[in-house]
Image 1: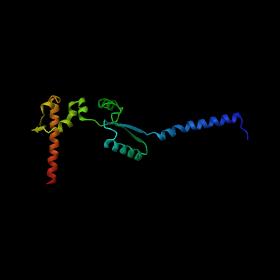
Image 2 (image 1 turned 90 degrees about the vertical axis):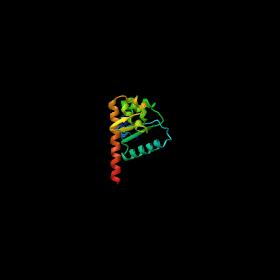
Image 3 (image 1 turned 180 degrees about the vertical axis):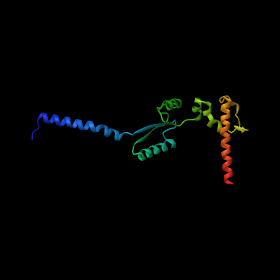
Image 4 (image 1 turned 120 degrees about the vertical axis):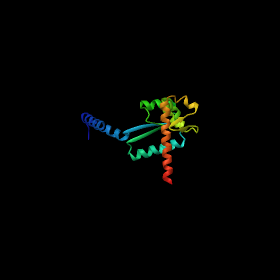
Length: 165
């Protein structure tokens, strides 16, 4: 059986058209619909990164590959302030950072660091801060906000103790 040049060209063109039409469907099946980045400053061997990899694999399998979480440990995407900038611009979706880095955006964001200190006191809804913190939390409205948050947390603890009794 012999093939003419014309038959061979028709068959080649037909196969190219068929593969060209099916290629987008194959490519779509291989890529995730949602691809998110999780960046942190911890070493790759840190338990949080190990659990993050497990979480990413579980999410990918439970969503049938529609959601892909990429993990970037050990400051692979830059320093903490660089990654914070990327979070704000949308380049990174998740980021583990220190409260002190976050506080560079506003003193109210320093709340986690302030509450961890033992010498913070609340009296009649007013917050008494040590002098080192007073310099950074300059505005009285921020001090009132801290005091309200602490007061509400104390109220919640008192209510939980009363429920136990």
